[in-house]
Length: 295
Image 1: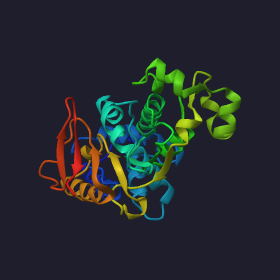
Image 2: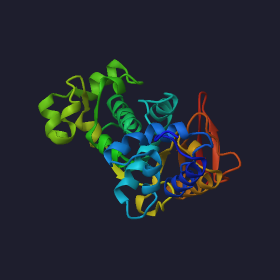
Image 3: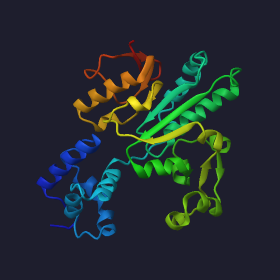
Image 4: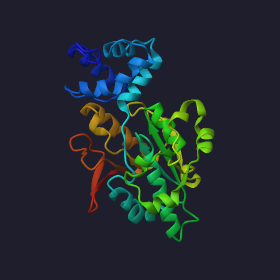
């Protein structure tokens, strides 16, 4: 057996471990995903096989390895302005309504990954402010949460390479909301010891007006939401597909409790809450849909 293979029993034990600690449900034949995500940890921790990485990560004493294993298994790439219609709805229909709140609009990007979604929300709000007569009266606070420490660190930094910048970001928005990153600036922001090997003068950084709107925080969607506050709009897109039906029900119930009356939930284009929650009404928008808290 290859040192990068997992026995069937080990794989099933790891599936249960991952679901208990992150809510993520691995399919029955996803050994290749575990192998590709966790193989780099063999060398880092001087462990001879993938089985050793998995076994050690499930021991309570191996806290750091456990964190890095869960981090590796829950990290997902994302896009700027993914699917476009939620951001168009936000600018054209929802933000005009929320300008009458008399207080800052509160939005939450749940499972924000590498930060593209919350920063896209911030850019949408800034664009609306620039073209709206109410721009001086309208404010917005965006909370962005994720389970992955590495993703949160990357998101807070707000620095993206040319590959990430090419995924859904127009040249107009790149010019309006980003600035080039010099080697000196990146070293000052990130610390030379960790990032020097990956310096790239083609990288760009989110400008301060965008960054100031977003607050990043570690959070597991299976945990309690009471300390996060109340929100007007929640984005949790292309995330629930990784959870079991029972976990989906729990998350949707907590989303409803975290929303203000008539608050709005955006899910991914292929996701549905049918049979999972009765606390939302589905609103069709042509294109797209969102879910509104019933009371």
